[in-house]
Length: 85
Image (tube, rainbow, N blue to C red; front, side):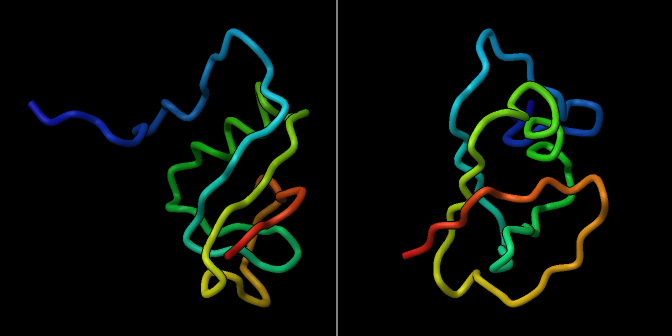
């Protein structure tokens, strides 16, 4: 049996017993305006628009992952800040 390392379809909602104040968000790339390019599973969009909607959203990446623009859709959650090396 293979262990799941990422949530599959339909598992994007995470029920936490508390509301986090800070969420560190990884991605394949971030734009300077806070948009992110994820892996397409919707896990972070589900978390950040749901239970952690009021949390400070901090994108974390390497400098080479910062780009000028990233295509986005209306349901994509924008980061409050992005931090790189």
